[in-house]
Every structure is written in structure tokens, then in C-alpha cells.
Length: 368
Image: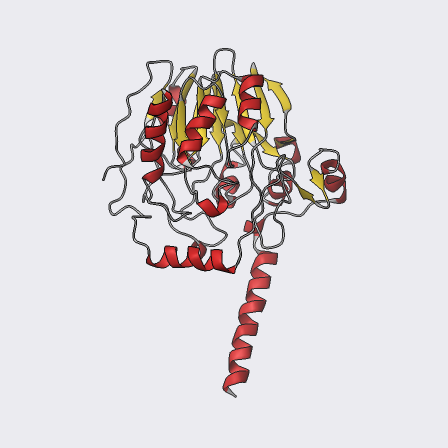
């Protein structure tokens, strides 16, 4: 009888999991036949999935998984800050009324509001508390508040998505934003998620690596990265991933999204650099997945490859998604940047940064 009860309980959990994956909108949409045919012409889609330019190993065996689990449960290295990190609250009027050609606000991790070419831009808008399909499946944001509530943002001209992972493409944020955004620019395949979430076809543009798009005196280029995609247990590599070049008449920026170090940084730097500012991934790394996330020292090297006049380490400061201390990325990358004589900025979350002025000094707000 006990065995029957246990089997029944496990069966209910399994059924519940299957229903959750198939019915929850968080997991996104499915690709149509005509979508697949379009992906097949991209040059990066084969055998039903997208591929990196450089063959990339993502395999982790049972020993690797056990090692990660042990470290996560028992290694004490301040993966989460002991004290809530400080943030700067920003006023909606400050954002709406600025006429600067290039200013920005960092929301932590990889989310930015940018004013560029007199247009309002969002990068990887993730405003939710937990980067997961359900609040119980992930670690909460370090900060209890955001610099500004999503609802108080002005009308957004352009949203750029680097890939469809939960810490970069957030269902709840898209649902709240979709009626105040004019255009979404996304990798191939991500349009299926937006369609599922009520975004009109006319609102989004799917781009392949090296595709260029020009509008309103701005130029956008979707450039490669070395990473992967997927929102569910059975759709890894089902959408493309990448980085973005955004150029106005006076300024040029690079946004890395996620990815490991590779030759694409030099390729992008040679073709589109030098950049006035490069936002480059620096966090959530581990030797076991070093081909799809950079070590902090590689972040600085990537900035050099990109010919960035100034770079900002991102993908840290808001969530714990790896085993390292929460503030280790910024400490390590500063050492390497100094060694390479590179200019780095590290504003506090919520700081309103105007890069038409002099480069702001680095103040170690993370030493808490």
C-alpha cells in the first residue's frame, strides 16, 4: 500500500510538471512550418536546431552535476550579498525629459534603459523578481525595489532582446510593455514567444546574424555570440542568440548579451568598431561552462577586441545564477582592465549616466 501511495504521488508530480510545461505561457510559443523554413535559410540552422559558429561543448556529466550541487549547498562565498546592495531611485521625469544624445540607467544584470538619438530604448527588459518560469524555481533579485517601476517608464521606441533565457526575456515584463513599445528587435525564432504573449506581428522584427536595420537615423546590427537558447526541457537551441550594435549619428554602442569568449569579438570590432561604449557580459561563470560564459578577465579582453573606448561589465549585481561570490566579477574585471589600460565604468544600479560628459569615476559601491 505504501508503495502504491508513493508511486501515485510521483505520478501526480510528473503529470503536474507536464501540464505546467505545456500550459504555462512562460515557456513561450511554438514555431510554425513557415518559420522553420525561414530558419533553414539562415546558415546557422541544421537538424532542427541553431548552432554556434565555433563548435561548443555544453556537456556536464553526473560528477559535474554533483560537484555543482555540493558547491551550491555547502560552499559559503557570499553568492548572495549579506546586505541589500544600494540602488539609486530615478525619477520618471528625468528619464522622459532628457535631451542628451546618449544616457542610460542600469537596472542590474543585463537590463538597461537608454536614451540615444532622442529615442527611448530598452535592452533585455527583465523587471520581475525571479528569472525563472515560476517564482519558486529561482533565486530572488537582490534588491527589493527597482530604480523605477516599469509602469512609469515613458513610451519605448525600441526593445532589443539578445536571447530567450529567463534572465533576458521575461514574460511578465513583455506583457506589461507590449502596449507601450513601438518595435521589438529579436533573434530568429524569438518572434514565436512574442506572438504567444500578445505582441502584434507588425511590432517585432526577427534578425539573423549580421543583419542590418536602419530607421529614424539609427542603425541596428544583430551580431553573433557563443551561447545557446531555450525556455523548456525540450527546446534548447530552438531560437537564435546574439549581440547588438546600436548606432546613432554621433554614438555607437555594443551590447553583448550572453556568451563565451571567441573570435567574433574581433570580427565585430573590425567591422563596426570602435565603440563609444560596450556593455559586456561579466558574471554567472564557471569553468564547467566556460565556453558559453566568459571569465571576468576575458570580458576585459573582449572589450579590447571590440575597440571599445569605454566598457561596462554587466550580467551581475541582481541575481545569483552561478557559484561565485556576487561581487567577484566586478573585482576581477577591474584588475584585468587596469592591466590592459582599458577604461571601465561601474555605475550603481539606478545611476543616471550621461556619457556626453566625462567618463564617471569607479566607486566601489559593491563593498558592503
